[in-house]
Image (cartoon, rainbow, N blue to C red; front, side, top):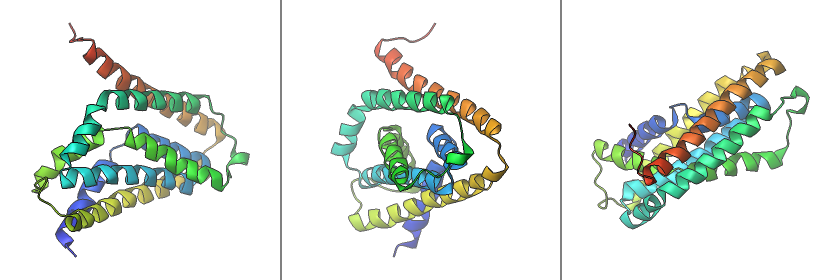
Length: 213
């Protein structure tokens, strides 16, 4: 067992997971509305997606990474559209504390919806390919075993963050009224939809040759 690679994987996993962005807000909103497990499974979906990109970046799979990045614009536009839809739905959702128990079917939906959304964000791959060389990794010269140790640490670090976040947020559920949940939904929904709009506009303006005043 390569302890060094595992520890570095944990660090990179935490660095990628900790910043609060639109996907984190979706996990937080699901935790507040439906409970810790819904938010946790949503976070684990992001972890799996990020782990896929971590393997690609670590092994230096130039062909695959190049293929993914060649579709960066359509993927970002798709992800932006999904975020807008999710944001609008969150804004318009009226919390009902009597309907918190949504059943096991929702659990798989939580996981796979976030997995798909996170996979549609190639910027994760860009981040990893920029970050990993700073840890001394040389792409293309690493083995599957080394990648396995690194990614195991990466998964542990990312999963640890979601456990901590959803655990802390879940403890607030009992103290929140439906009015406060509605306000949280409106604020987070507007932010998520706004990020989605920016994700769409940025590459569209770039393709149109807009450089600003």
